[in-house]
Image 1 (cartoon, rainbow, N blue to C red):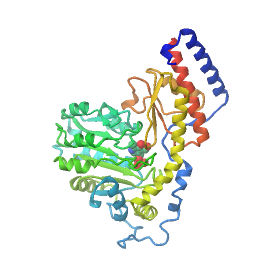
Image 2: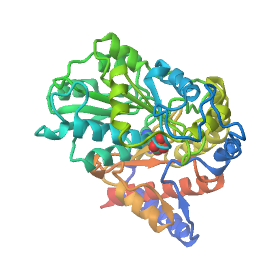
Image 3: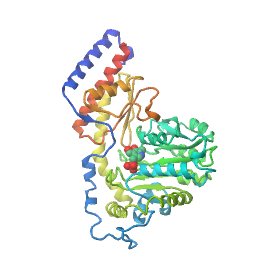
Image 4: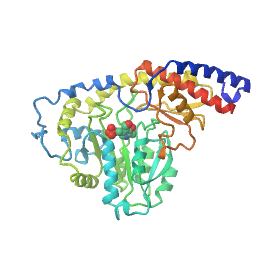
Length: 422
Ligand code: PLP
């Protein structure tokens, strides 16, 4: 029965029952963590070949000694694999070091300090710079724009992409210079940008001539089902609409090989790539090409990536299934929560009763279950409805995950009952 349909006595009984469960949970002295979307040790083991690669042959297919300086754009054979994933010619893809977040940071800072190829002036010289932020979204995107004083305009992230009416309205303001977007299996809802929404994003009018979509395809091949969802070809769509420089695409092997020692990629128009490399060339003499070679030999080609991702799926899918099963068992039918059922990516997004997410996170913390702070998925950490909680099922063992989810469900029910009784 939904909470709304309960009498006060029934609600009190339910509250007391959850309170007893919660007291037992606290007494159990758990230490569980559902915070960051990190691969588990078993997933990292899938790429342990990297620890012995590239072996004594350290030259790439062109005979370049990967131990030495140079080659700012990265190793061609590895870029070729991600060029296919990003739907771009290999010349328009750069392979960097271990974090696509660093490439996003640099792109933003280059635009701020030097302007993009289409900017009338560096962004710092504008009175105000605004980024459209689909919410809930990735906390580290928002932390970056916040750090550089960029105003953030939230728009709703729907199952097929951002609310385009809101996006079009905002883009009519010349201070709006760009937007964050995770097109496939978005963090945290698992939303997938449809072809139609991508085509609109590519074609829409923007008041700023240098509007940029930071198209962060962190989960491009991170399927949780047999269906390999295809990301729309935003670069092709934008070029066809006369806005070739609009999207900058990002990806990485952080959740394909090693999260801390993978390779990241940036792809865009020829002009944007030349701009990025020109500015990057002052920052570094070249990336870690030895790691590129290791990765090229380990992954081999796109089929190699997809095979590896199938093995990740075999580890991850049961964890996501456990999360959804426990949510349904414990919370289904009570009208106190809704949650995403992602077909890929790293997160489940849980919406609890408005005004109770912070309380749920606090209750969990006191019971030894760590969750990301409520509001993390919103600009400035402020969820206007205080209802969203991001669940990261990848890292814990399945037994720990089950225990944490059961505890979380108790906290959701207890907080909801507290609120209804107040
Ligand atoms: N982008 C999104 C949407 C993410 O969720 C994450 C990690 O959680 C990253 C980027 C980080 O990627 P990288 O390790 O390549 O910096």
